[in-house]
Image 1 (cartoon, rainbow, N blue to C red):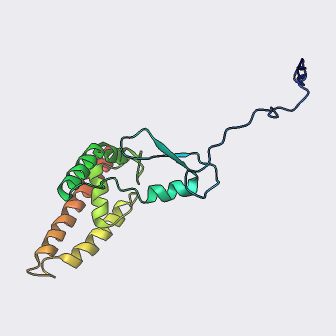
Image 2: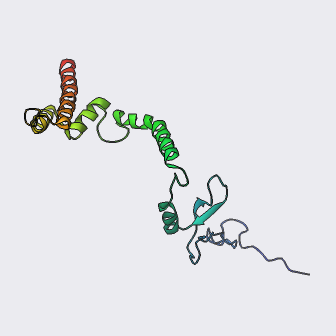
Image 3: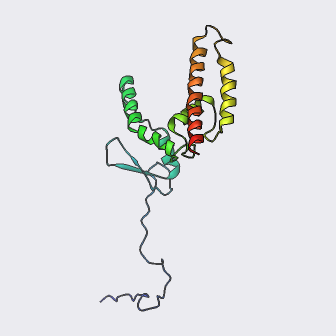
Length: 177
């Protein structure tokens, strides 16, 4: 006849401290050969497979660092897949206009942000800085300074368009305010 072991947990207050239970905690070890660290970072064994490796943080970073999303695809298929990914995520880029991502405080439109980028200015630049940057950039690539240079002429037109966008926005702000 075996004797039942008496528990020390009966009644209140508990006679043992919390967390001192007798059950063993299940710990998964890193699947990398020779590593004895805790493996709590799952990684897929193959594309579209439910099977997972479980790595420690160090080996998970090593595994993911070599990951190539487009591995095994031909060049044309890679470009098509990349274009589709960019198109799907284009809506997230628009959120930068509203101040949800990227620079700016949300007071400028996407066109204004692109115009500031063309002039090489920060998102919070005032109109005096815009005028100064426009004049400096326009002097560098003006068709009179670089006659016959098609690239310089294109740059000059781009700079002029950026300035016009920012000037019109500034006039709207002054008119409203």
